[in-house]
Length: 212
Image (cartoon, rainbow, N blue to C red; front, side, top):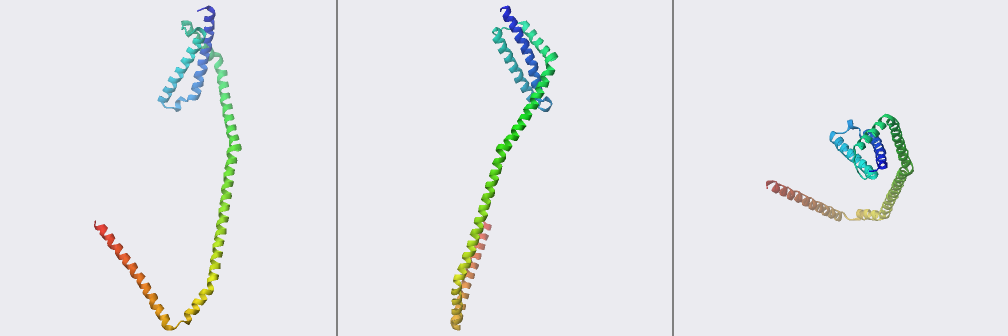
């Protein structure tokens, strides 16, 4: 490994050390350890450090083909210490500003989508429902009016026949009227008998099934 390669390797590892410090702060800012279960924190930590190890090895692979020397660890520590002492305050301020900006942008976009897309669709659906209900009420009112009108017309048309039948009934001789009265009573008695037999049969069937 040449001196130039070693120099580039040290610079790269110092940068990776600073990156690790920023990554740890960012990870802690979004994880909220006190609000999560321990097993979730453990899995997140394992995945986080696995990812940081892969990033570090990838950078090392780019600058010196993956050779690991002792000074590489020193460079990582120096980069991390430089971040903690010089860059951490500025990075955390920038991170909080970016988080606030992202939240504000998200809220603005959500309100914009609500006003431009969702609200018009809701108003359109409500208008369609109101129109359909109005059409239904109009059709129901017209249908009801036509039915009542048709019933009135039928009653009016059958009124002469009713008068004729009433007049004919009055003109019938008393023996004929008496005969019709007897006939109607027999018919009524027949239907009453059928109804009673039906109830009797149903009661017998019910008792039969209850015994079983």
